Image (cartoon, rainbow, N blue to C red):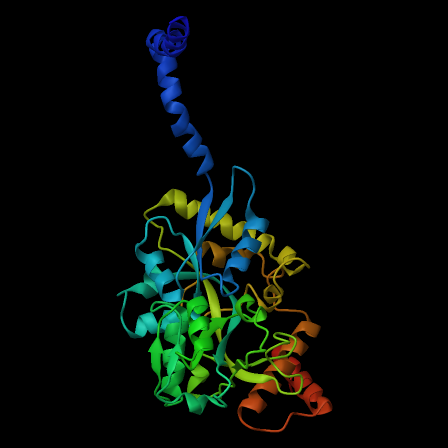
Length: 378
């Protein structure tokens, strides 16, 4: 009986104290969670990425590490379902401020008129890295033409892979039956023989493929570069360094690459979110050089902040930053430019079936390009 009285008394004390609490104190206690919410949401920018099968999640982590600054600035990555879904979320989903998209998705959405007037409501912050089209096939599939009338998985329906794969197969005039499972589910179906191949657009080296050993005969197929693709894609190559267990040392795999871009939502009617994205841009662009240091994803070295996305308008605060800091955001060094030029020449000649250009001839051509670039050409 005594124990029951003590227990009841223990429970009754807080209730009596609350009843006796002055109105001002009660109001403060009620207001505290709201104040905490204001503090924790200050400076937050929500960044939507692709799935974890690619590298955009890692890119978002790198950005968060550079940009986050305690209570004043914070990046919150949100894993999306793919580029087309990300674009839809950017336009319609509450809270998404910026997103990583494939550049061909913007072109596709414009061609299909998915969002009327999107040229004025969607702006890009910066072009990012290229992502390669990976095509993983069963042992009996020797070339991409063997996929005619076969099942090929292209990730979820609204993914960037689904749109890119459909466009590339159309360019190649190759009729395939597209399926829409997540890559992890498709991989098991590939191993069981339910599908002939799976496609995935991801920056190399993509974690999804790095983990495959190739001991079950699965292999990456070459994707020929068609001149009709040149408006939206680039020739690319997957090497043994990218995937030592999937690409033979003597036979790199030719494929196609598509650019990615960091895009901002139309936040003109949301001043606080607009300021948050503006602060994000300032921190990203100012701290960009630190993303080139070891410990961050190597694809950051492909990024030039000043690179333009033809046909699209840059986010005004990003354009203003570039105008103020042209020397910081200038093109890569001569050595970096020479390396990119060499890769460009090699991939273009390979795509057209020409023999590799001799090193001396390539160096002379690069010098001619530099003379033209600097206005010294005769």
